[in-house]
Image 1 (cartoon, one colour):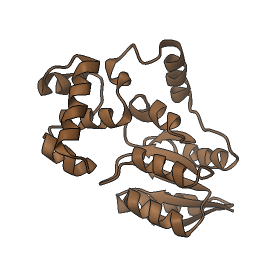
Image 2 (cartoon, helix red, strand yellow; image 1 turned 30 degrees about the horizontal axis):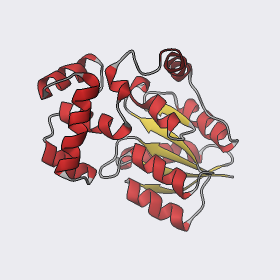
Image 3 (cartoon, one colour; image 1 turned 120 degrees about the vertical axis):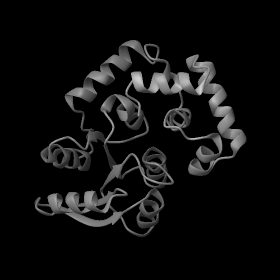
Image 4 (cartoon, helix red, strand yellow; image 1 turned 90 degrees about the vertical axis):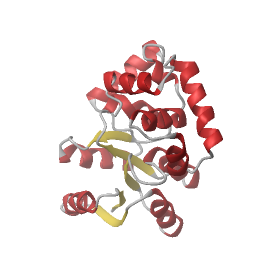
Length: 209
């Protein structure tokens, strides 16, 4: 049996995914988690083969949780499930060790296929993600400034673009205000976006929200 943990902060999404996977032979959903801390707490007590992980969760986000899972047990395969288009996070999560990136608009069969491939030790790469990876290999991160940002800088940039202040961002990411201000300075340096209004406009133009 392929042992699966589902992590998403929306109960209705978790239940829907569980119902879908319960109908698949040789796949067993062991448990559900609503945030990154619950994921790690469960994995310290039980072994699973695949984690289906939402990228946007309260507190510790999916990208940070992914990195923590790989540090805790590199053998656990992680399929990242997201409401965001692939061009926002796919390359980042694959670089961080994910076995696949699937949007929530994908067909259910795609998730099942990804889980089975991940269990076998392979990565699930959709045609859209394959194109993004090919573009990244060819052009690196030079074609769009936000691709120059580290994962944490990217999260801070998206938070600023969504209207959050430095203090709110610090609390959400469990960082000091000084650290968030440093990240903002690096964002300005790497992207040339000098004001919050510039960041908001850029995020809208590049579909980052």
